[in-house]
Length: 424
Image 1 (cartoon, helix red, strand yellow):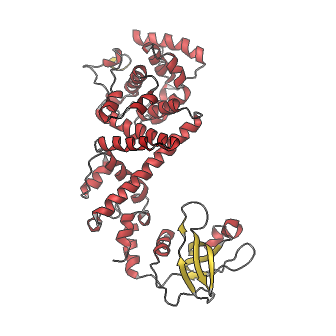
Image 2: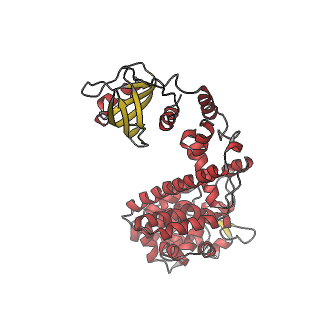
Image 3: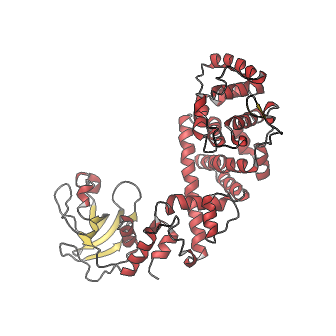
């Protein structure tokens, strides 16, 4: 039995309180269960409990077995000296504070309805990717919708933490942060890591100095990516090599190694060479890209921001020296939508938080609602269970719910799971 179940039992007081006494024989009455703590420290804080006729205010710690108090070294941690009650499923050891005083312990085993335990085990022991898949029809729509709303907020906050990490690394330079995040997402998972390293090793400020010279922008990006490291190539390749040789020396650049890029099993349209050419066209056509994003309020206009014609060479090549049989299309709609979801929305949400201007958060949510529903294995699983969605607002919530609750079997941290387990 997981501790999360005991947290749930305590939080909602789903146990028999008749003749509720501590292992020391003192009567126990719960006035307030306390506030659930998801960070370090005791599980519930500011609880109010009457023990042996005396009202106590403090923390509550919960374990499956009382001996886990020592296993987790709480007996050596001052943060646990304010624990007023130890709640356990099984009592197999007496516990004390650091000063040697005894902490009252209550045992829940035998006090919880077996039906509740059975419903809980049905969820957490399910082998299905979505543990509650066979019970979802029992969940009222209002609970489903409120759960998705909550999870979407959590997902946006999580992505914002990633933006803040980059922002701190760039000394609060929003343009540089935007550039690095865009580079990361132009990698589209397969080449995400080398794109991250490329952005970190080639500052946006350098590129801005050459924004009016498309050839030099491509030379810097392809050269720093290590894709110009071969000696043989066509005329355009050799031209970029010569440009980069000068620029590399000027800015003391150390390129990536060509082997860091993945081409195998990718469709030509997803080759990193194609993605770098698309990134180059974006940087050439829109200087100070973050400012451009901030100024846009319309979803269609935002999509057009990323729809830029690549240079003439890359309209006919997927790779250097390999000419395509037909003209190569510009970046696809699904790729633009992915950039909006993974770059624009987190940037706007983080900027909204840092500037205390909710307008940008509203805009981020609006962009999600205007971006079509994603089509991936996770979303399709939900759709097979009868959960439809209209936009990326819904699909991002579905992905967050699946990755952070279903896969980890955190059913009792999910409103849907709580509804299914709770006494009817």
